[in-house]
Length: 206
Image (cartoon, rainbow, N blue to C red; front, side, top):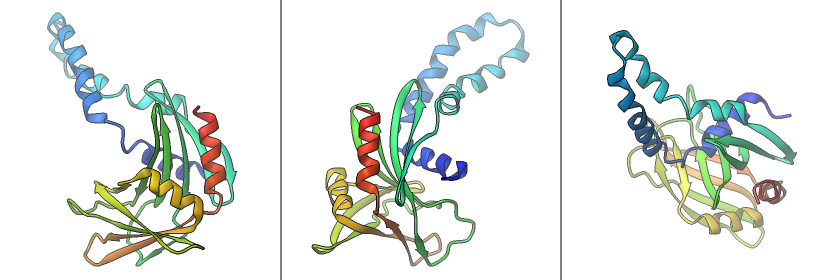
């Protein structure tokens, strides 16, 4: 059974492409008109703190919840601002070289509303600006190259359809990214069970 820590890490990775900044800007704007009506200055500092919190409770109340285990992959759901999100993920089977104080390294494929097959890798350390990690899927018919772009501590597949198609054909994904102290870090993810896990999340998020 997958640990809660890993499930939570994958849930965070599944949420990487959510436009949180836009949502965060809208919520405080709705709260501001009520502030001038509060005569007590002590209550005003509490309003921004409350306005920043609505994105957190839905994830706690509605997930993450496991759908099932499929070889090296896990399928799960969560509720994010009232919307059901389904995602499949696998932890890195190997990483080289070792990076100190690195968190879980997770490959995630997410269905969110009308957006399907978002492919992201949570790397556990911040990547340099404009970094372009390179992915190689090892398949019986020959290796398949995939392009990624970076944002913070994550890498995203530029062509999600090509990535998913390669995952269904392949045995493993090898992702090479710039290391936090120079050089390159290579993470290897097993693709055994990916197709079944993706089928499960597609069924859960029709």
